[in-house]
Image (cartoon, rainbow, N blue to C red; front, side):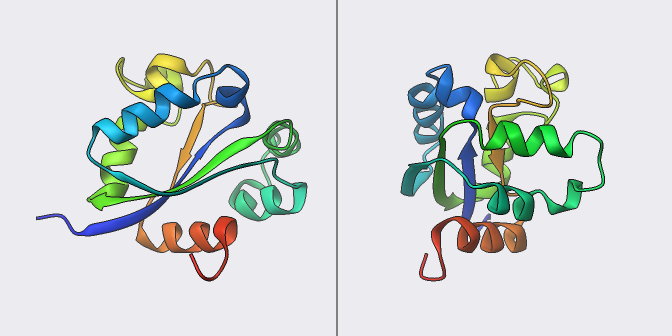
Length: 138
């Protein structure tokens, strides 16, 4: 049986701009997961660079930082049984061209550079990302 987990989920600027937030939240809630915290904010470049530091040597990094700071995002802490895996399943493949229909990316994303949503890929990453975006007391 899966454990109760917490994960960090971020609806990216393209989804906020295109008014997909409500539909994405509905899909999350339909899975039985709980949205513990939710906040809308425009990220600063330093936070984005820290969050995507593992991609800093990629040629698209500057464009990624510009995209992620281009408008507000919706930051969430989502919890429940197997929350990390469940969220990764409903989000779909990182590259929307590979994402199955019925997944968030499969239905709404256009390309890998603006793929609608981010979700933590494991428990350690989730803990780091929750602290990064919600502070030490989250």
